[in-house]
Length: 159
Image 1 (cartoon, one colour):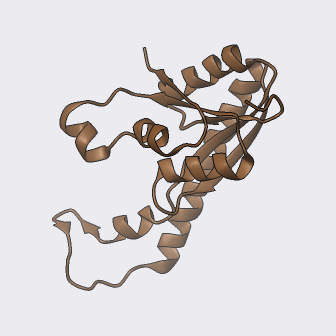
Image 2 (cartoon, one colour):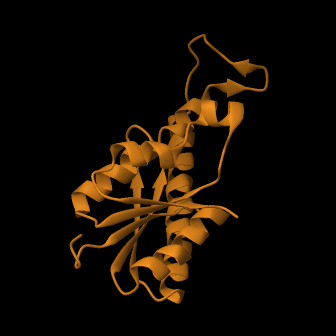
């Protein structure tokens, strides 16, 4: 493991992510850290097609201006979340930098791609321990990161 390479901490503001920041500080000490928050820009288009009665499969006009406004709000929320993670990381003694990225495929791919681009030593990610049907429907970001990452992955479970 390259001693100068940063550690990447996936941070979504959840209790598991907050714990992952604290554990990363304990495990990796003074190593530089990237606190990464991933946001999903395309989600606004999906929500534009939903009505209280359910998805409308017929062609419906999309309020492009509204979609752009929602995407802007999602990006600002991601930046605030990353800033929260950055403050937590710095208070835990890490030399950290906040990073936000928009996912192109899914959150796990965005995490792994940034890890490759930045040559990180390890990825630290929280796991909320989804099980049963919910885990099958939503998938597991931590599991997908473990399968795809080229570096060590530390999974921190929520208490």
